[in-house]
Length: 485
Image 1 (cartoon, rainbow, N blue to C red):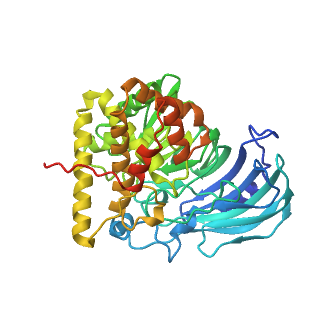
Image 2 (image 1 turned 120 degrees about the vertical axis):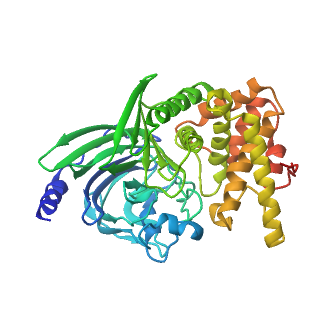
Image 3 (image 1 turned 135 degrees about the vertical axis):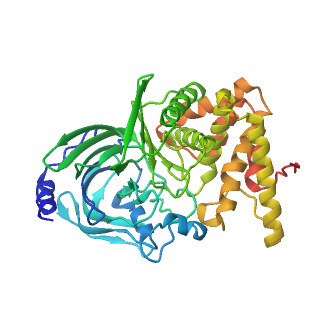
C-alpha cells in the first residue's frame, strides 16, 4: 500500500504537456490523462487535464462532461435484466467515479453532477468563440466486477469510457441519458496523451501508439492518439500477442485461450484491407483486436476493438471481428449520436459486414443467405412480439431509451438497418451504390454526421432524392415480405 501512495505522490506533481493542440478555429480538444491502476482495490486514480476549445458561436460559462462510470452505480441498470447473470459473474457489483477536485485555469471551481449521475457540469470563466480554457479533474474510478466495457472479469480489466469526456455542443451541450441498450455515446474528435502506470505482470492494449518504461515493480506506458473520438485500454496478465504489418498499419491480436489465433488475426487483416478498398483508407497506423471479458459480442473504440471470450465458434468470432472493425469507419471516423440515432452507425456497420463476406467468400458466408436470414429473423421477431404484445413498434427513428427490449433494439437498428441498405442497393448500379459510401466517408470523416446528413449525402451521390425511401423505412411504413424457412 505504501508503494501505491508513493507512486501517486510522484504522479500528481508530474507536469502536464499537451500534444498536437493549436489555438485556431475548430481546434480539437486535448485530453492529458495520468492514471495509476491498483488491482488490490480495482480502481484507477486519475488526473485529467483538458484543453477545451469553444468551437461554437456562443460564449460559454460552463462545460459539460459525460460520466459513463456512474452507470455501474447502485440503482442503475448497465445491462438488460436478461443478461445480468452472464454479466455479473460473482453476484451484483457496483462501480462509479468519485471526484477529489476540479479546477479551471489552475483555480478551484464549482462543479456538480446531476441526479442521474451521467453529466458533470464545470463552471468556468466565460470564454468566447475560438477561445480555450484548461480544466483539471482529479478523480478515482472504481470498477464493478462485471464483464462490460468498463469493469473486470476473470481475465481482463476493461477501461472503456472510463474518463469524463466533453459533451458535444449543438446550440447547447448534448446530454445523452444512460441506457442498458446499445451505446449511448456521442463525442467529438480529440487528441489524447494518456500515461498509465500499472503492475509489471500486466500487458496493456490501448488506443494509440504506446511507449512503455519499466521500474522495479511497475510499468508506465504513454499512449498518444491524435484525431480520434475516444480512448480505451485493457489490461491482462494472460495476453499473448500476434502482430503483422499490413499496408502501413500494425495489426495486433491480444488473446488468450484461442487455438485459432492466427486465423482470427487474418480475419482482422482481411477486414482492414476490404474496408480500405470499399470505403476509404484507414487513417491510423495501429489496429488492436482484443479478446476480453465482455457480456456482449464486441465493442468498438478508436484503434481497438473488444471481442468477447464468450464467443464459441469460428463463424461467430469472425463475424464479430469484422463488424467491430467496420465500426472504425462508421462511428470511429464518421461519428454520429449513437443515443438518438443508433441505426445510423449500427445499420451501416451491419451492412458493411455483409459486404465483407460477399467480397471474401473464403469465409463461407453467402451475402444472399445473410440477407435471407436477416429478413426471416426480423419477420419472426415481428410475429412473436405481435403474439405477445398485440402489436410491435417498427420505427427505426428512436433513441435508445425508446426501445422497450433488447430484441426490439437489435432488430430495428442492426437487422432492419442492414435490410434498408440492401433494398437501396436494388435501386441503382452497384458502382454508384458503393460510391455513395465512399463519398459519405470522405465528406464526414473526422466529423459528426447524422441521419439527415447521411440521407443528403446518399441522395447527392446517387442523383436521386432518397428522403421518401429512407422515411418509409425509418418510420416503419415499409412492409417486409414474409418468407418461409
